[in-house]
Amino acid sequence: MRLSAPGLHAPHAAAGPALAAIGRAATLALHDELALHPKPGLVSYVDTGSHQDMDAGTFLRSLFALRHAYPRLATLGFEGAGWAALQACGIQAERRMLAATGGINTHRGAIFNLGLLCAAAGWRLAQGLALTPAGLRHTLQTIWGPALADRARLTPPSHGGAAVRAHGLRGANEEAAAGMPVLFDVAWPALQQALAAGWGWDAARAQCLLAVMAVLDDTNLAHRGGLAGLREAQAMSQTFLADGGMGQGGAWERLAALHRHFVARRWSPGGAADLLAAACWLQRVCAGGPPR
Image 1 (cartoon, rainbow, N blue to C red):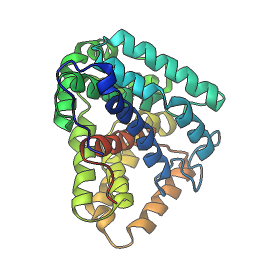
Image 2: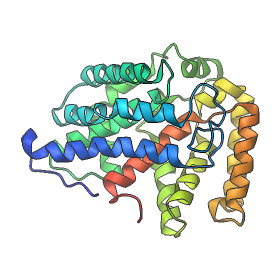
Image 3: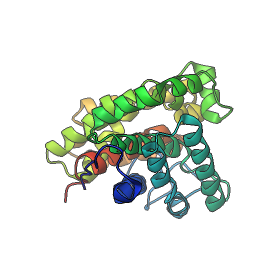
Image 4: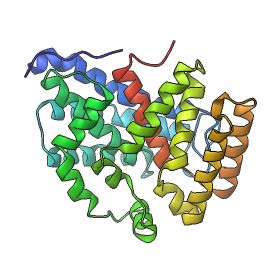
């Protein structure tokens, strides 16, 4: 599915199907992340990773609860809404998620990242601009960049915020304010290079995840494993990639061993998982979808 933009200031009736497709791609991208296995420490259909309070069913309930939020965020972007409106919609989506999961945070980071991307796509549709990774990044920086920079200066009272304060890390707010460099400069190229190499959709997603884990200041990892745990996880991912990544012999067996290592230490790279989902959304919106 490659979306095309209607004319300048197209009416909602004309843009409706495209806006719905943008939002649906976000839900599908979150399922792309869930369905991958093995992935170090993370929930899948096979096991619960490093988590005892959630499983694949929890994630599916969350996805169902969020299915209307992403089209709404795309519509707000189409309407040229400011940051306050996007934030209010995101807060409502988070409440629906928590109600569906019994208070478990499955997708707070993904509501933020994918919500911003959907809004940027909606804005570009209204302007008759192409939906490309570079264009979406430019829109994020120019339309909501100042508001995101202000938000980044206010570290939230959360586990991730505590890790940012304690270790001087760059969290999700800082990443967004900078134009999501790990997504656009690391995750997206890694996904495209793996697909171009003919590795297939599963291996490409795994390669993308590891590329992100190698560089991201993942505050979820820092919360669970401290700064030392984060750096060890990054180093292990870097070594895996240096040895050939998902193109090396026995890659899946080695990835499964990495998964067991993370589970034994209760490490969970939730921030990297969010960016994997964001890269899958780019694939669906900008590049025609996953390979058949």
